[in-house]
Length: 412
Image 1 (spheres, helix red, strand yellow):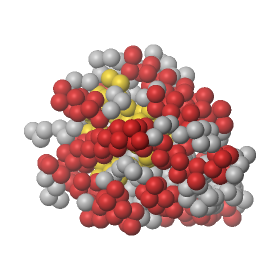
Image 2: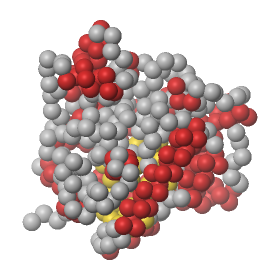
Image 3: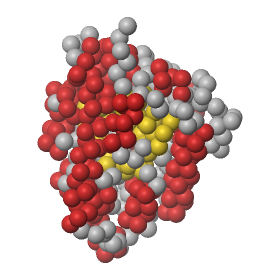
Image 4: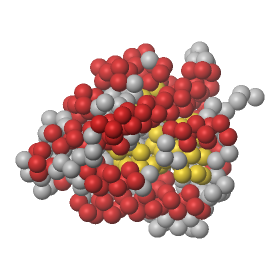
């Protein structure tokens, strides 16, 4: 029998899914299998999960203090989940905690990543407060721009990172918080790589050369990521991994626009899609394998990880139905001559090393400079009023399959 490869997954949206039931773990007890979810404790064990970055996500429709409050509620939900299941989950806030969990193989290390820079309300003090609460990465944007960073699925606003956006990256480096470049525009990726003194991550993204979706990573950025020491954590989102699903999503959105449907309105798009004459094609395990192989070819075996995005999607590839199926991916890679050492790197070693190196950079930076007290008003010449929508209208061409092909959008 093949030994399970331990997994450190970069992105799981179970906390947001639990928000729909008021974070009631009596109503939805993840100690037993929950068929309406992708994630529960028995299936995490079956999949070889050693550590999980739980996403403390809030949608871009929440702005300002509402976004901060909802993020704090998400953090509280992760603490509640860990407290409820102490034999299975343990809070971890550093790379050493992941390594200890890997060595002991008893509990699943639970870390947190905040998805979307709008959750800090353009405040470095809020960023530091989230770090104190245990949040160990920040995704600089979600599906819409922040006043200081451009999203992959919004019209350009500040041309990548504004001066304040660069200061956010520098302060994250000083804290030891991983800079997550999933969701951001290529210009933002490049600015962040120029600015960051520490390795960065993509917590749940795939290769743009394999599937031309704006949420994926261009080859030049993958090459720069290798030089940076970072990790691209391959996601399983159907529209990000399958060119066929991507093409279908564009077709449906074009038809919706002709029919006068606002493609940003998820409810309206759901209704329109139900009446569309063709059904979406299925993504497959082979699609995900193709992304793994491409990222390995461009960035190298030391810069690949896994960020499934389970419970943040409405559909999954055939063969990767839930968190128990990571072994199926590893077996498919074995069949393509990936060694057990290669699989250990993609499963857990690369992201653990990247995290450790970011923490080591932080030790040095904290000796060199105090916490930044800069404000967006000082650095960017005045805070934008519109929050994530500033910088122009949403671009339908960029958004065009986000809600349709199993991407995050606003979580169900």
